[in-house]
Length: 306
Image 1 (cartoon, rainbow, N blue to C red):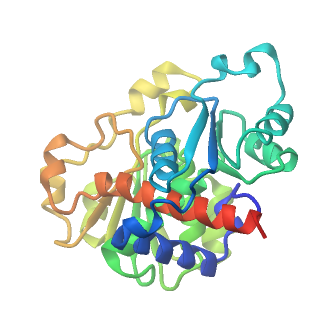
Image 2: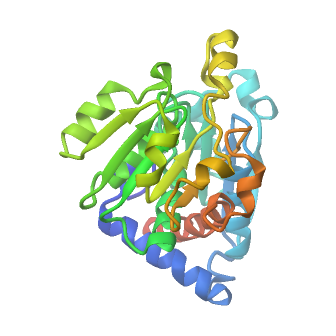
């Protein structure tokens, strides 16, 4: 594997290997502090990001490497009309590995076809966000000890939520998974994912509009925000944005070992009162993101040097 564009680029064995490496990094940070000495990560972010960009940068710095790049398209030659392909070729002259976020679906794939160094897709439109999926998988593993025999509820924007689509694809490869899809009718999971992933793999799923009815059966609740930037119509966004708010009353209906996850940023779909509940895992998720990205950078650089 030269680059990581989709979570499906990774086999379950490779995912397990990355999770094992991340857990070793958590247990033995000093062992890895110079693992990427003299290596450079280029962060090419054509779209705003806090967690993803900073976690990639923190990951490389904690491995002893250095970071260069840009955090918006206007501060790059894209503002002058440079193509993604040419940017990738250019940056390959300066860095050892690229992390790219782009609003256009497929842009990181184009970069990977033109770069001479590994490219990591850090999010392309509503399409893929594989390192968020790896973050989610590491969090599930650390909370539950396994990916098998879990009932997972996805709540909120299931139509545009690339994190939801990728995580469903990843989990579909494990045993005895059950999926509960909680959303307004307008933001239901796309039918192609139901057909090509859930139905094709024989994964039982239910669709509901009620979080209260669904929550008592869940082992994991994956909350998402309704994403203003994916809407064409402000009225639709305003009408749907507060459909689900997870609060202490709803948490009282849940299992004592429920794990609440959220890819963040949250707007108001999880009450801040839930933050102090030991079942709230979303800030642990943020930290796990740094560790799994450290593991991924190590793997790609190691394979690129072969």
